Image 1 (cartoon, rainbow, N blue to C red):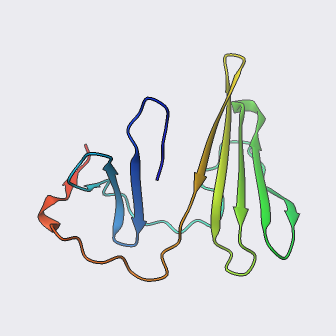
Image 2: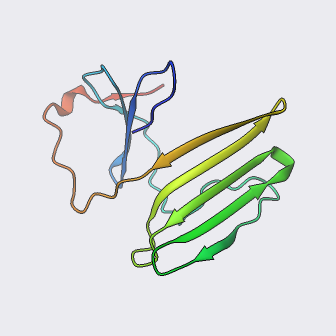
Length: 125
C-alpha cells in the first residue's frame, strides 16, 4: 500500500499474472498490462548508477544504489534467508529539496484468491 499526503491510498499487486492498481475508494482493480520481469533487488538502473552492499548481517542485507548525476539514491533491505526485498527507500534531490519515498513490501506465501468480480478489471491507458 502506498500513501502520500493529500493523495488517495493506493494498493499495488504484482504477480506473474500482471500488475494491478486499486485506489482507496475504487471498486475495481486496474491492470497495467506490463510483462512480468523478475529483477532481483534494484529495478531500472539510471545510467552510471552503481549498486553495492552496504551491510550484511544474519537479519538483513542493505543494498545502496546511488545515481549522483540524477540526484537519486535507492536503499533496499533484503532478507538474507529468502533473498526477498521487504523495504525500499528512494531519495530524489530536486530544486535544493530532497524527497523520500518509503515502500514496504509484503510477500504473499500463497497465490491470492481469485477476484470476486473478474469482469471488473479494467486496463489503465
